Every structure is written in structure tokens, then in C-alpha cells.
Image 1 (cartoon, rainbow, N blue to C red):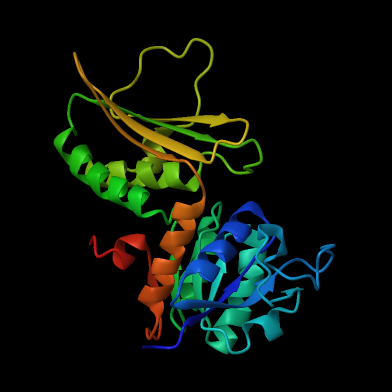
Image 2 (image 1 turned 90 degrees about the horizontal axis):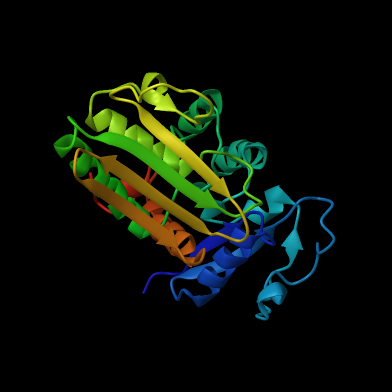
Length: 269
């Protein structure tokens, strides 16, 4: 049996960070070797498993270099600024990255792609296996329903989410647009108000809901004359994202470099 994959979790005390730690501690083929937090965090030095009631012997740290020393992968579901600060250190130390952070600009995505020339990186707006199955179904549906159907993408998340539309919703729009030979930048509309006139053919609409503790709901609606097709994914917890991230970690083991997404991880290309 191979040694466990040596994992570092960024943003370890956040909602997603705690879920990732829980998943790693339960996985027989993974081992938590470090848990990162910001330098001013009040829990630095405390056991990273304490918030879960599962002390694990790994202390929360802000020392990125030390945390990554000897690690195989960094799992990062933080924010763009933090992820980009971690990127050059992982690149220099040869540590693989699994990036679930969303909200990157095109320039920032290019930085990640450049780093992937030297280290293996999986980046995906949503790492849940079910969501990635939906991505595949959307590609098929969008090709079949390319004429005579209006496309609307509705997403809902908790009140603390800072970017909109979600990275998952945007990816859904990209998949539909590509399948229908459209440019999403020209086709997308991100809100409607007032006297909008009739809906133009070929538009891809986005609607965003924020409230409470909604983990993540996404629906793509294909509305035709006399019928509607809806493809929906609803997350009841953050654990599916964490389990997907661990599948990505297993996929990256032994790979030298390259930029991948969950479609690669799941063999859906």
C-alpha cells in the first residue's frame, strides 16, 4: 500500500477548510500534515481538529514555507488574493495545488496556467462529483436544445458568499455557450430590471440569490414553447466539494506538471 498523500489545507478554520480537514482525517489514503491560517488569526498554534472535536496533532500555522515543506499538495478554497500568494511558493517547492477558489480575473487565471507549466494543478469552480456530472449533461443538452430554447441559469448561495454569479454558474454558462457556438461575453445578461423589452434570442441569463446558509443550488433552465427542461444540482453540505478535492489529490499524485480540471479527474473528456 502506498504512503498516504501528504495534504495541506489552506483557510483551515473557515467553513470549507473545516470540511476539508474532516474529509482528510477520515480518508485512509490521505494525511493532514499542515493547516494554514492568516497571520493574525486568534487560533494560531491550536490543534486544527479542535473545531471538529477531533484533535489531530496538527497545529494551525501561518508559516507557509514550513507548512509546505514535505507536503505533496495544497488544497486551497480561500480567496483569489490568498491563493495567488500561495501559488509561487508551491511552484518553487514543487507542491501540487488543488484550487477550489473562485472569482479569479483572466490575468490571475493566466498566472495559475503559467505555474502549471512547472507543477500539477487542478482548478475547478466546483469539485463536487455530482456537479461535474451535471456539466457533462449540460454539454449534451445544450447541443440538442440549441434552437428554440431560452437558457437561464439560477444559482443560490449563503449570505456570506462574496462573488456573484458563482464560479459554478459561470462555468455552466461557458459550457452552454461553447456547445452552441456562442461567445458568453456577448450572450450573457447578469440582471434585469425595468422595461427590458422582449427577450432576445440567444441570450444566456443569470439570476443570483443570496441568503441564509444555503450551501449551493444551481439550475439551468432550457425554456421552449410548451416545455421546459431543468437540470439542477443542490448541495446539502460542503462535504461533496471536499471529497471531490481528495479525488483530485489522488489524480495528481505522480504527475509532474499540467493544468487540469475535474472533467480530467473524473475521466469525462
